[in-house]
Image (cartoon, rainbow, N blue to C red):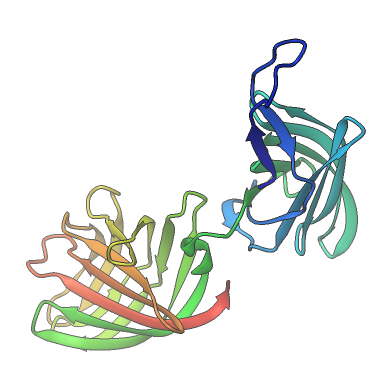
Length: 280
């Protein structure tokens, strides 16, 4: 750990029996999420490093990330009571194709500090998290594969090549972005199933999966179009029984999405299996 609390082993002159904050001067690894004016909480990998070092009664903090650059904060202030850190420095990174140096401010909890860059992309914040990235982060990326769709119990399977995108959140949940895809010559005609992003799937450790009952709770909708046997088109809300699960496989992910839309009397079950195409 970067920090630890230890109790007093003997009484001091000022009878201070409060726990003392000590700094372990060893560089630590972690993972980062970055927010800017154009995006929020985007995962940028688990290759970041952070070190807090005592220096003649003061502290310096060093941060390094392969993409977000390097900075050393000198004369850093540490609030022992609240375990927070504060300081300023200059971060060197490649931005818009050129290496530059940018004002940087360090703040926040010692095990989850943030670095603010006011002059990068309209204001950027790097959030460092100490330790190993959770499973949601490990699944980050785009996956190319095949979606197999059953309409009710008797129609299908209809298959189509698709690419799903998984993005993690700082709280350990993940989001699934399902692209628009077309299913020709189904029992209902030619179907177009619109793009939808289902957010905040939580990790279910009992079943080793990420899961969410999303239905009406999220007020999500899908643009659905059917041409042929049953002509219909519009934006339809999902039925209350709609649910989705994501499981890791040996070389990718498996997604099972069961949903109802509009007044359809039977569910659609879309099963996607794919391998990593980009990300991680």
